[in-house]
Amino acid sequence: MTNPASDQSSRFTEGAIIWPLLTLAGPLTATQLLQVAYNLTDTYWVGRLGAEAVSALSFSWPVVFLLISLGGGMTNAGTILVSQHVGAGNDDRLAHVAGQTIAFVGLLSVGVSVFGFTFAPQLLGLIGATPGTTIHELAVTYLRIIVLGMPFTFGFYVFMALLRGWGDTKTPMYLMALTVGLNILLDPFFVLGFTGNPLFGWVGLGDLQGWLYARTGFAGFGVAGAAVATVLSRAVAAVVGLWLLFGGRVGLHLAVDDLLLQSETVRKIVGIGGPGAIDQSTQSIAAIVMTALVATVGTDAVAAYGIGNRFVSLVWLPTVAMGMSVETVVGQNLGGGHRDRARRTVYVAIAILGTAFLVASGLTVWFARPIVGLFITGPEADRIIAYGATFLRIVAPTWVVMASYHMMNGAFYGSGSTRMAMAIGVTALWGVRAVAAVVLVVGFSLGATGAWYAIALSNVTAAIAGAVFFFRSSWLDNVLGDGSADDATSDSSPTDIG
Image (cartoon, rainbow, N blue to C red; front, side, top):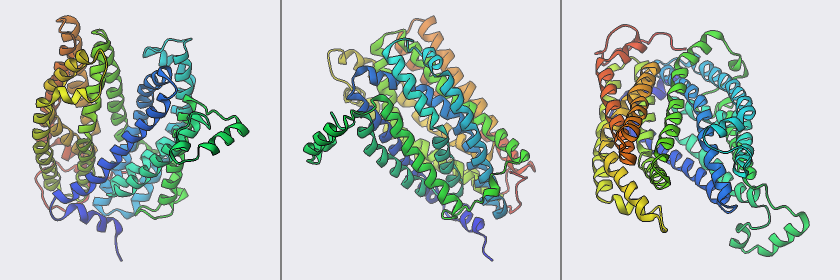
């Protein structure tokens, strides 16, 4: 009788390590790029409504990311539990932990929706949207529609997390492509309706557009339309994802009974996912704090910071993808008792990314001004380019050590050592960044340059802290529970993981 979990695990626990990592990371990188396309689509179509509409989205997104981070941490628990059960060959536990994760994250999403809808005006006011203004009103409308769709967003994310734990990153990539395609089609219709919508002209149907507008008078929902398009796209993705899971079409095969919450498993999900949620929430808060500090220097510095972060986020996509790959491969190897292979997985990932970022950081430092210049034109461009080029020249040389940190962090998450990962992230990374920025920007009056050095310093301190805990090997003990850290071939099962 075949064991699907063991058969799946052999892909990641046997043979060369580099291929499993690349096999997972490729589709994950594509998925991240598709997410960028998703955000750019919203920005493009809303941008046709004017500056106030774009500003409304800019104020809404930090709050949306903060709320999503709560669910993101919990979905990581699904990745960890599924990957370790696959590694251990525990077919009988896979559907249970997957169903429990879906049910708990579903309940959490309802709570987040209620909270976000109720306090949307206050949350937007906290980050600078002035109550009573058009921008604030538009932002409240957009945010409230988005948070009402949080159950769909969380459902889609938990589907991706569970499949990643199983070792399938292609199916989530295809589903992300579907939802991005839907959003591209729905956005112009819901934002602009039948007037001002260039899609009809692009395909030679301008006369039909005029006829439809004359008959319906539909001019779109404006900013609210972008939110509606997003929710509908996410809803389709979530429904398809659940259909795949409950139909047994993606390796995991869930039943309705798996959704009946059991206190022991819920405690495990919260224990593993809670620290991750705090870690991701801290990232969102730190980004808001950094933006506020840079804003004290001036609008040119804020623009440069935004451009620099936009470029870094694009360059950083392979790192995010490889970190997720490490999480899956480490989880499956530790589940199967292959501790030495789990450790070597991190070394291989660091070698791949370290080499890539040595080249990328060198090119970025050399071409810093032209890179920033691609994102900005106009009378203020020279000042913004100067700030942005300095940002890249200070931060880019730390990319190699930061990539190493992210690979070690992926191992911590894959092992279930999420408290350790949270502690390092909150203190050595985001804590150091915020404190150093305040000291350098405000205390020493170094302006934007002080903020850039704070970012670089925090990257280094996080990598050092991560290395200290990584080489102590306590992250291995957290999963296996027998205190051993040098067994390369043990077939012993880990302690109960869900």
